[in-house]
Length: 146
Image (cartoon, rainbow, N blue to C red):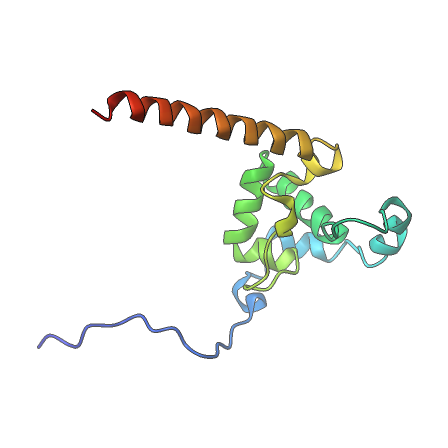
């Protein structure tokens, strides 16, 4: 007898602990035992401006970079994707399931782009490329519209 079709229905409340889903022998659990980043914000306070957009949490940034270095993730964009998807990486970075990996004010630039001051130039270059692409598409469509 064919049973009823299972329909995906989002629950109103979930009881889920990331900690329960990270194996006890995972490399990041071993690393977590030896690092203490509790004072990093206070140590770095003088390096941040009091105006402008909020920065990335320095502890999150360092934890993400540790994940990348220890697990061989060389691309920062790939690292952001992996931290977004992997529960062990989220656990190590102290991110909940609903937390964004990076602050949305970064507008899709990597942490090192921001750190080295390349973010504005990258965003300007993307805007120029976008304008040129749109112009080329308009020209193409106007020539082939008939």
